[in-house]
Image (cartoon, rainbow, N blue to C red):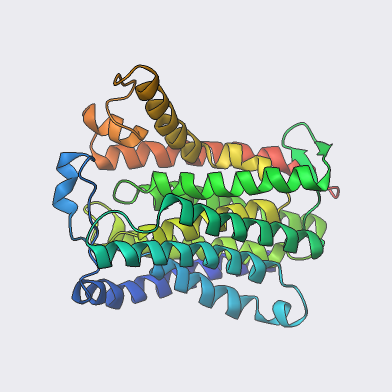
Length: 341
């Protein structure tokens, strides 16, 4: 077995154990702190039974990812390979924004925390700093690689920066929208993490590109951490990840895509995030244009399916399966990027 493959597997297992153990103590602690989720009044009425379920459970996989990345990548980090640390810090910044939002919701005892404007400005600043840092470190080029076609679109740096910021803020919020059912966002993101672990691992084995081995460990750590979180988040959920977890996840997914220098791959691996967000945009736009008419029973799409008779477990299984299929497809789309093949 190739050493990097073994390292990836061990990182995932260790992260799973850490996340699951943290959850053993975190879930009761969140209950004691009365960190309960407030359910939207305009949401599905049958979700009101979830009122008070502890939130901010995303701290489980966040802490597991931090520990595994720093321990497993420690020697490489000390040698100057900062790629995994940069992506980790980027994701943590988004997690911190989510934490502020969750904390505000808990304090106010309602489902509104930071304003949309406050969150957008914070996310915008984080995205700009991240892209500029990746560019300065030589990790990112201002070119768009088109999966399957093996071509690059050369863009002016300013145009690329604007594009990247829009992709990051859009994706992060799309992941947040997907976090609407027990285990949904985490289950959909598992294949995404597996894809990036495989892609970074493949790049290291075939190309020996600096930073890819560390990023493979990052993706594997997040995968294992999410599995540990699902021990408590599967239906019926004992804890929710909260915006703390969902914004961290969104930041991590974007961070991995840009660290791989292939942001367009998010169209495939993030297909469920995109569909969920589009259903929300279409619903709101059509509602306003027709003065009250709706295309979906309720948006986003997972609620529409629920109202059509699907239970939560079916929605999660189908969405996660779609995510898996598109992530497998995406892997074949990026293999040609590496010149050693």
